[in-house]
Image (tube, rainbow, N blue to C red):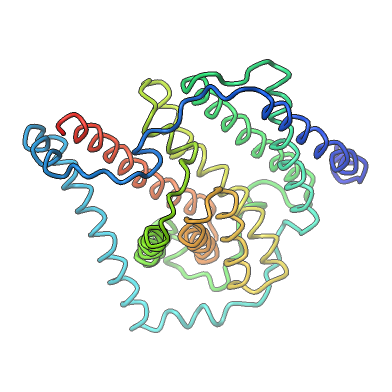
Length: 351
């Protein structure tokens, strides 16, 4: 297995066969008639103008109104808390520590490992439509599409974890040391309380992510651009089955953060940090993180979030702390999206 993964033959075969197989699958899909209904207005981001009706509906549903108040209060506290933490760090001069970090760190992962892992993952992604056609499982309804999206995401995440773990066994380091970054200036508080340090760094960066998201939305509105609905948006706003909603929560808030942090911070950032200064590695890994999420309008806020997670990893050296921050962030976003779904449904009914 080690010889196969670290040799050239496997990657040459994949490079020759994967593009051909993918283009064939795309031709077959384009030849088939589209039968899946379009996404709902809420999922596609269409503007809804029924605020008076929504206000009346909220008066009749105090539980949802309370949830709206709690969600808004949480976001306000996160923004204000982020400004306070960031301001405190600036006043205390803690930002100077970032300038003292070494230009490179000795990490377990190399760029060659990164290239091999990304090649295998890309091959899996591009071969997926071929497997779908071979199994005669082309989705014909919205429910089938949602089920396929959930299943394919689970298979992809599982494949990523499997590939990384298999490669980790071939490294000279073993065990937890493979995913533990040697922090530039380990402080006693960081060693004893990495989760608290991770939360502080995340909150300090949250206002900037929130501001970038608001700016991107305003730019899209000014340009008259309505971004197409992403698969996760369709799942959130159009899916009504409880088991599918539970699977979405598990993938977005539990398994997804684990997989993404193992890959993007544990492998990608670590391999870049071996050759680049911290700031360059954070920005590059952040934009790679944003690129795979598939929508240009959210490129900047997602890239900032990816860079912030890399900063948390560099600051604490704990991948577990980064996973916790990522899971918390996704949970906040998903709960707000579910709340928006209920609000739009309630407003439509009351309009």
